[in-house]
Image (cartoon, rainbow, N blue to C red):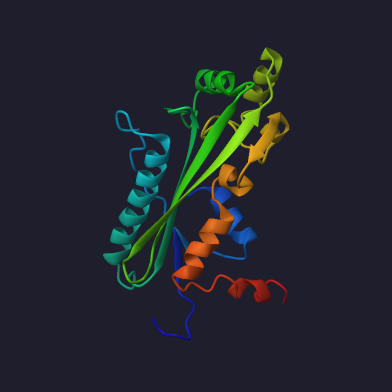
Length: 210
């Protein structure tokens, strides 16, 4: 890779939220490359271990696919996976209203944890990982509040059946830790990981002012 050429960053995720968060930090991925993997937890697998395993699997699978492409070598590959858990119980990325209702019932009036595993495969092929944990407490939800949130459809496809950056933000009483982690990508840790491997994380800051 030429020293004068900006390195290529591939985001191994199709999540619009993760793209927006990177853009918020002044980083524009050159390519979005979702990887379809089985996200089912292994028997007895801790939520934090699941987040780490899935993020690494996504990053390594995307890096392997890129290595088979012409000109696909020597890029940065970033992947993340967010897991919402009550105790050791992993909540699903709800697709059905019944699933979402059950999730919200579990979250009502109690604290839960959000784990995001991030994995970066550098141009050298070396993989580095971070795990970020945030504690979130919901208010006690009435049946009416749950029904209205289900009717909004905002929960669909979201880990734990809610999106803190949307309507569900009004249901949160307290958050301890990274807010962006709950949205889907802990920015401080992600940017630090990229910078440590030599990616020019501030290159877009001056360009944004032009």
